[in-house]
Length: 502
Image (cartoon, rainbow, N blue to C red):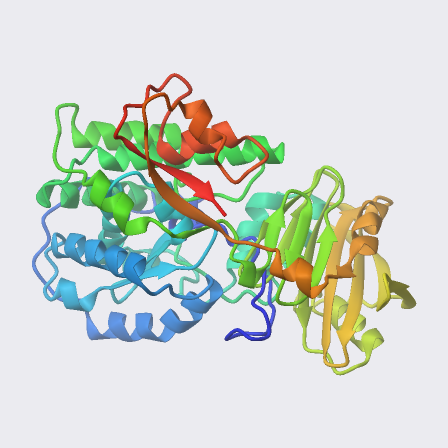
């Protein structure tokens, strides 16, 4: 969710639904918008333009902040070295120095690029990979977007295509759909998010895949790695959908084509059945060992239906049947009958004014302000609180909006915003009532999960190693997807595999 007051940023804005890469926002793009061939073509050697560098440099700090900050240390240096090496294969002059490769402290599977040679990949996506060739393929895909100047080409056909914008609106539409719930939910979940990653046409995505494969081949990597990492992403998407009990999820890096399976097949076909090359598995595993996996405690931790933030000393429970998505600075709570977010804003000691401001922030530009009829006061587990509800008529029907705010200090407040079909907002009541302060000892007990690499011993099986995973739900499925294995996979003594521990 958000960083503790001791961290760099205290302001809270909703980015909880931003679990997609730059490419993911384009799933609904026009496949015919880009008339050029999707196959890689040799490009004249040229440097990244000064204009593109300036545009990227301006957006880079905000983008890094929105996605949890830039990681440092040996893992980040390793990712950077692979990214710069694969960028050289693009043929762009000064690629090694002109490209900026950033490992982001984000618990979602993301990779994206912006003009000027800025390439990003999240620690969660790196952890899902199984060798250096796969990482080089993903980074090469993003280098391909830069080398092919896809951003500039899309600008000719898009009514608005800039680095800064409203990513939340795009993604909330994918999650919430076109219903009344979805239409107003798009406004709700886009509040505070001012980050629009560039959307590409499907043909540009295919071209970037193929360019990445071409770069792999030039660098003597196994070009089939693009297909295998896409398969891992498809498997991870399916696992997350199953764990959440829904297929209505935020699009991810592997889902920019009509279906992930077709993208895997296309990548493998482009690589060629008889392809080969280095994958550097052991080097890769050594290079990423120790990465934080899942939520960073500084941003709060989702554990099943419970959210705990050790820095802010608070915890709450999601309603039964709902699942949570923890973003860099907010939490989204999603279910079949409604959606909610937990976030915060500036607070001056007036809780009623805080609630009214939360409603005002949901009002679409140019439309009549959403104003609650009355604001009620209460206490929740000893915490001063205020709440109000409003019934709103939308184009698709009637929905109920509710804001429930808590005063944690005279200058610190947080709140839920919930949206549900008319008459169903009471589903959030148990969650509102569950908000509580946590003790210092409870805060200290919150631990980060880490990626570890272990060597298979005689007698080890996928089942015995999966039992060591730091998860109580679906540990075997998580272990298999993490390592690109199946339940029938046979492990060999001396083989290295990934597990998640505390």
